[in-house]
Image (cartoon, rainbow, N blue to C red; front, side, top):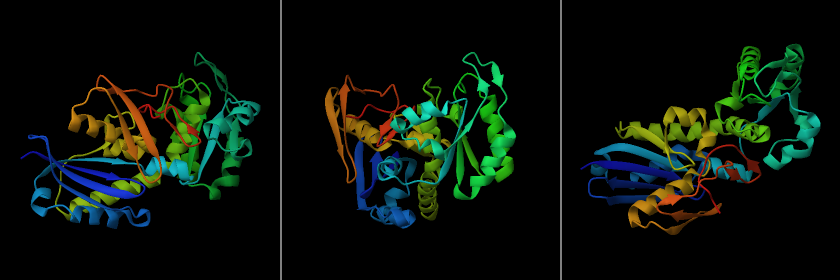
Length: 306
């Protein structure tokens, strides 16, 4: 048999399924209550509900989770500081909150940057940045750096990242690493949220790997992205914002494959959120403008959720 193991950790339950790819059959299922304070134990108890002989034959492992999505709804995540380069403070005051950004007083604004063609307008004041970082560093665990035209020239984002890394040794996320959207605030929301979610998704991945290793499962590991595609463990650890809405995306893919329906509505009802997607010709709609979860309006690709 060619067996795969699927694990989904939601806000209320964690589910595991062993699937026979050759015969398109579900071989075994297990469900436990999700314990966010003990993900390793929670996942272990779920796997304990599956037959040992079938687990031994697993050749691939695929994951989905609503942990990141729920964290957005519940306002959880690591403390991260946002640095905006070339952004008018007044514009951020007027529109930043619409995208989930913090108040302007909690953002570091750097003058200078590039124009829309990628040409240098002015070098940012690095000494000012250093003073601001030194002043607030104890309050934050990571940083997000976004320039208004950083998708056309990311040199100053990279330079800012390198300086902050040298000064603090902490994790820094740049906007250009996540999305090329023209909208500065969507890129800022993506970067800041990504910085906040890294510890959460890393803990989830660590818990999965420890449990697989304990049971001698050495199969390749992939995780669902919010647009229905798959990503590697390494990619997910660096860009956890890509897991937004991956739980509903997994429900869609599973529903289509198990039912064979081409035109339908898929509803994913969880303990924290209920999500619905419309399927036409076996293809779900895509949120071209980016995933919207709670207060966050990001530039991250995802399925279109109603």
